Length: 258
Ligand SMILES: N[C@@H](CCC(=O)N[C@@H](CS)C(=O)NCC(=O)O)C(=O)O
Image (tube, rainbow, N blue to C red; front, side, top):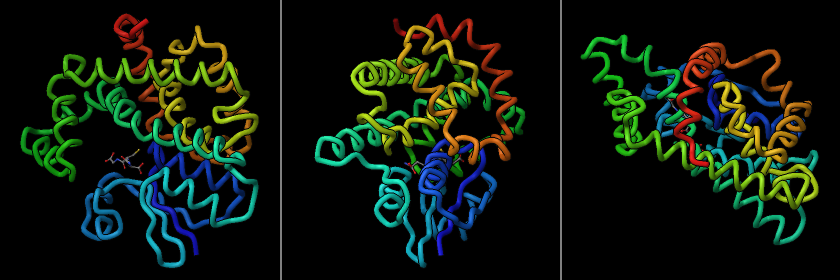
């Protein structure tokens, strides 16, 4: 039995769901709320209180990149790795990049779109919300973003990190059709949800001068896996992200490195 815990709108959850769709696998999906992630019951499955959590025949598998790799190894279906050591190395490089860039995506999402609603909490609720984040590093980042908004030191770091991510993608796509080689692989699965979030924020201008990324993104969106994950169950926060992002974009584009 294959079970996946995720929430609609979770970048890492989408990563795992895209891999399942690419492998054409049936699974029991448990779409949970953010509040559920903080319960004792969920933390027994995933001590960090995050998604995704995969359970396969009773074994718990955590970390989205590990899950991608596991799903490809454990099940039949179209292979999502490129043969040979170079293909494997490139796929792992991109999966590592996706993990490194996730906090930058979180910083953009929370600064631009989530912060105003969170600031509606009472001081006590806000403190309980921030203190409820299990990992100290994540807690400190979220506190700075909520308290300082665009002035937190994390925003320029995210702007630089995501610009570099797109620039690295452009370089790879100048050489190969897909990120890790001549065909779609786990590298593309891992990076798609990050670009999806920038797209949800209406920050597509970040790749207006990157034709390789623009073309790759159109090809990602044309794949059946994209519709399988997003057509019937779009991110419920998608409209909010777009409205906030459209408003923020003129100022955000000014602080993006060239
Ligand atoms: N390194 C972990 C990161 C997981 C993570 O941070 N997930 C986010 C969603 S993308 C989450 O569950 N956040 C909890 C929240 O928003 O409350 C992975 O790749 O699985």
